[in-house]
Length: 177
Image (cartoon, rainbow, N blue to C red):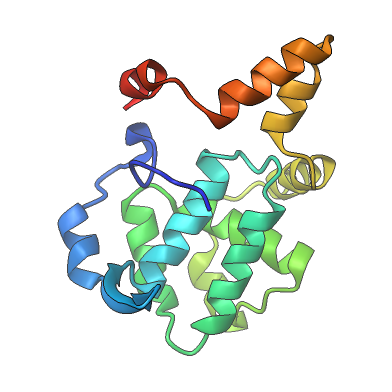
C-alpha cells in the first residue's frame, strides 16, 4: 500500500483537472464500501506517470506489474485514443508510452497492436527504453529506503534510520504536507 496526498508532484500536473477526473470516476466496492475510484483510462495514465516521475523507474517492477494487471482486467474497455489524448494534454504522453513498452517487454503485458501507433510519441528515443530497463532490473527486489538505511555503518544508525522511516515524526509530516 502506497499512500499519497496528491496524485503527482505539482510540477507534473500540466492541466490535470480534478473536476474531469472526478467526473469520469466510477463506483467500486472496496472493503465492503462503495467508493469513487479513477476510471480505468485515467488510472492507467496515472500509474504510468507515477512509475516514471515518482520512481524514475527505480525499483519499479511492482508498479509495472500493477499496470499489467490493470490492462488485463480492463483490456476490452480501455479507450486507447482517449487516454493517449488525455496523457498528451497533461504532458504525460512519453511516460505512458515508455511505461507500457517496459510493461510489455519485461512482463509480457498485451497492449493491442492497434494502440501502439496512437500511443507512440512523434519523437521517441529508443535509448530511453534500454536505460529504463536497466534501472528497473538493477534495483529489482531491493527497496531504495532499505538500501539507504542499510548503507549506514553502525547497527545503531541502521536501527535509528529504520525507526525514522517507520514512525515519521509529526513535525516532519506537517512540514511535508
